[in-house]
Length: 272
Image (cartoon, rainbow, N blue to C red; front, top):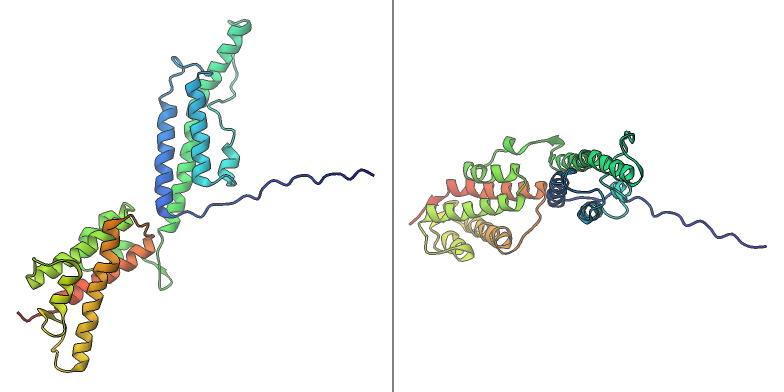
């Protein structure tokens, strides 16, 4: 008895988990594909032109790259073509002319339909991005503008955060803190960790967070110094040397910490 081969099961559908940065990049790529489609003029370009085939391939590859080869989006558009079935009046045409006329009409109708499909993918990504940007705080959803940030942090980070440039928002807030330390201490000849160690040293500080009257005060002063030092080494410097993909939640956490340090700095006493 001949054994029948088991049918090959299709690979499971995989819905990609996006970061906000991946979504932003994907949207920009889809916009480029839309622009390429919109530039096609069916009065000048034939439906069987090689450039049309190239654009169709770029669209399919872009969708595969953004959403993944096993994604529902790629499965929907794996064979996408700039083509839309429409009724065609063949009466004025005969033979090969009739076929050419029909193909050109369907190609022309496919241009706006293809644009709509790509716009639909963009709309899906934009909705996903909104979902990722809802920041949970104590069981509530609090937007950026409702956070009680130091004015310097809010002024510099707000636009960048709302435009989804999260690493830049953190980086600018960290730079603002460093500049604020220089301004309050008058130490414009130093920067980074050396600045923080000099300004907040428990032995001979320029700015003090307490009266430095006992060991507890000295411990607090040293601990605060390390917090400011850490803000430079762990928050500002990495974003100045490479690109980091901060999530909205992570960006708010960092900006909140920098805002707290700015508030403490504002209250610190100048000793020199």
